[in-house]
Image (cartoon, rainbow, N blue to C red; front, side, top):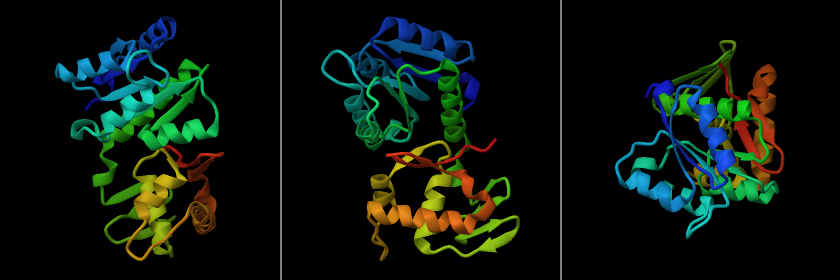
Amino acid sequence: MNMKTAKILVIEDEQDIRDLISFQLKSEGYTIIAVDSADKAISVIERGEKIDLFVVDWMLPGSMSGLEFTKKLRAQKAYASAPVIMITAMTQAENIVAGLDAGADDYMTKPFDMNVLQARVRVQLRENSSEAIGNDLLTFGPLTIHVSKCKVAVEGQEINLTSTEFKILLLLAQKPGHVFTREQFINNIQGENIFVTGRTIDTHIAGLRKKLGDTANVIETIRGIGYRFRDVE
């Protein structure tokens, strides 16, 4: 997928906001389909449109909220990993966590800067098109992750990580810009004789950052929500 030929579905019931988002993203060269309800969005998908990214408002009229739409979307094989940016006026940490746990990749609270939205869209489309998960060697500046060998190096010097630290780092690095909640970390790395809780995730992250040294800033703390890997150009 070429980022600039990406097709974006905007689901927002407030016409002024919907029109502004559509205008700004069209100005970036994207193809935009804009609707005012989840029901109409489902109709768009059912008629065979291939959507590359979704911008979804949480509070929508009709039978389905943006949250419920995102959960339904994730249940479809074709859209199980499609980027979803959720927008809402609800700013409480528990709301943001609920949105991310429902399957949103990113979350923006109203009012937001359109330039920031454009940047978030670029991050999500870039990550989705890079197929980073399929790469055996991930490189971010001085940080290198050799997936199959479970090895990590900084400035060419290998650092020793525990199994859990490596799993956490790999999960983050495979989706730069994606915010992971503690629950998502637990669901993704639990098993194989590894037992973690929300509290121990923070401990593992602290240990991981210490070992990463000067490159530790690639892991960003999203206060009250979780962590994400800083997108590196």
